[in-house]
Amino acid sequence: DTSASWHAKYAHSAWVYVGNLPLQLTEGDVICVMSQFGEIEDVNLVRDDDTGKSRGFAFLKYEDARSCVLAVDNFAGTKILNRSIRVDHVEKYRLPKHLLEKEEEEEKGAALQEKKN
Image (cartoon, rainbow, N blue to C red):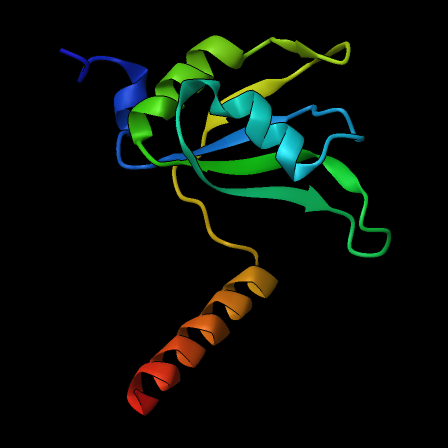
């Protein structure tokens, strides 16, 4: 019975926080490393608005919330390029405003395209 586990609180969320990432890693690098425990649906490597450089942390969505448990349990403290990364559950993830707006625009465009067909 996993209901007694602290992971149960996050059973509905497939998002994890990954912190203390080496700044030179790209989204592809993060996906490559983190996909060891499941299929990744989305990644948001947070970047500086002015320079576009990585700020050293990311939010990642797995296809299945069970993959989050594996990632949190197995990646915490793992070293990547001599930096100990931090991996933790995210209870409620909200897309950043600019990504949310982009997603809404894409949905509107798809709906208009369907109406035309």
